[in-house]
Amino acid sequence: MSRRWDKSTHSTPLLIPPPDMANSKFEYVKDFEQSDPLLPSTWIVVRIDGRGFHKLSDHYAFQKPNDRRALDLMNAAAVEVMKDLPDLCIAYGVSDEYSFVFPPTCQLFERRNAKLVTTIVSTFTAYYIYLWPTYFPSTPLAPPYLPSFDGRAVIYPNTRILRDYMSWRQVDCHINNLYNTTFWTMVLQGGMTNTDAEQELKGTVSSDKNEILFKRFGINYNNEGEIYKKGSVLYRQYELVEPKATPSTEDEASVPEAKQSRSQQDKLKKLRRKAQVVVDHVDIIKDNFWARRPWILSGTPGKLPQN
Ligand SMILES: Nc1nc2c(ncn2[C@@H]2O[C@H](COP(=O)(O)OP(=O)(O)OP(=O)(O)O)[C@@H](O)[C@H]2O)c(=O)[nH]1
Ligand SMILES: [Mg+2]
Ligand SMILES: [Mg+2]
Image (tube, rainbow, N blue to C red):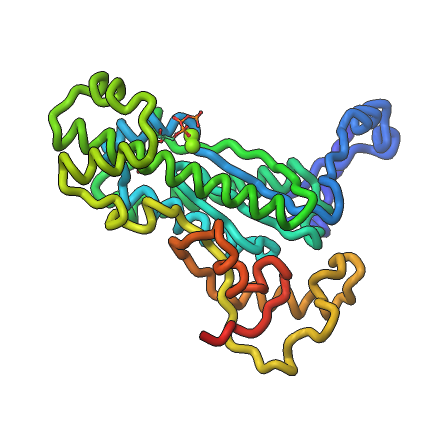
């Protein structure tokens, strides 16, 4: 086989097949590739989760039940993902997981499932590892305990269900944190064995755990850190925009991006890219959070609500 090198467009020479090999008998293998676009006009949630973080957190001696450094590192990596992908409108993180949300109007990567998931997972992992020394300066990462994440995309057909999804994750955060806080207080402060603490907590409800914490250890669960009780919510904060500069009656962003003019799309993208990504630890189950920040669900970078 003769070799020809394309020097014109690539600094690294590329091997170009001779004409008789182009579109050759091998090219049929392309037909095995399946397209995987996610249903149009639906919310897309990409949820990633740390692989084997139970072992990894033990190995690097994360504090129990919560290690603030580990959570701050998760949040820092997620902020970089939000900055890298301006299409994302909100993200929610707890423990070793993060949910990243694309709006129904999103056309990024033609909404291809694998491309969206793998981009988020690898960007997040890259930043997690890159930023590790900032949060764990005296604990270097070393094989075989290297952090990795899995990911999946799920679509939700309307805003109510998307909000129910977000509420589900925050309720999970609350239930797990109350359990873990009580369990580790019984073990670390109460001197109980893991098995005894687990046994005693079996079948208990929230009020029982609150009572154990308060009566036995003088801990008021309400006073625990908001980051632990509520998880972390990331969204874009826009500078105050003059009312006439905001989109008019029909929200631009409610029109599918494919149907928006190029200049409208560019304008929105620019605003999203310039916006500051905020990390908050607040209730996202009640309406208040969303009502005060209408641009998150409408996709329209707008006016900050007046207090
Ligand atoms: N000590 C401590 N452990 C944490 C913290 N955050 C997460 N973890 C650990 O990470 C685990 C995350 O749970 P999972 O995602 O269900 O379990 P996993 O071990 O990652 O397993 P897979 O996700 O199935 O691979 C928790 O059970 C904890 O053991 C933390 O702040 N402190
Ligand atoms: Mg995990
Ligand atoms: Mg998890």
